[in-house]
Image: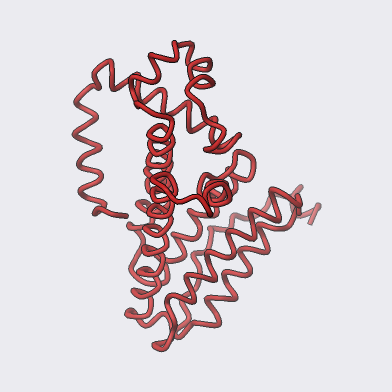
Length: 235
C-alpha cells in the first residue's frame, strides 16, 4: 500500500533470484514462528525465551537477531502487514477502477478474515493490547492500520471519480462503515460463534454500496452450470 504494485512485484521477482544469506534465513524463520505465536497468544505474549524454545535455539541466538523483545514485536507487525498487503491489497489492483476494485478489496479482506477467525488478527488483538500503551510497538501497529484504511478510503474516492458512487459520498464515512463490518464479523464469529455472521457482513457491505451508490455496477456473477439430474431432484 505504501508502494506501487509494480515496484513491489519487481522487488519480489528480484529477491527470488537472490538467495538469502544464512543469517537472513534464520531471522525470517524466527519472525515466521513469532507471527504464528502472536496470532495465538498476542504480541504481548511473545518472549525471547518462548521463541527460542519453539525454534530450538538458545535465547542468546534469538536475541542476537533482534536485540530486544520490542524489536521482535515490531518485526512481527511489519511481517503481518506485508502479508496482509500481498493477500488483500495487491490482488485487488488488477480489478477495474472504481466499485469493482473496492469490491475486490472487500472480498479479499473477507477471505483473510475467514482464516483469522480461527487464527486471530494481529491488528485487532494488538489494538486491545496497546491501545493505551504509547511506544514504538503501538506506533508500528497504528501506522500499519492507518496505511490500510487510507488505501480503502482512496478506493472509495476512485469509485466516486468513476461515477460508481454518488458525488457527495463521504469517503471517510464509507470506509469507516466497511471497517466496522470486519470488526463486527470478528466479534460475532470468533467470540460469539454466530454461524451466519459472514453472510451478514456481505449483505451489510451491499447495503452500504447501495446507499452510497450512483450508477449500479453489478457484482461479478459466477458461471452457473446446469445441475445434474441428482442435483435437480434434490432441489
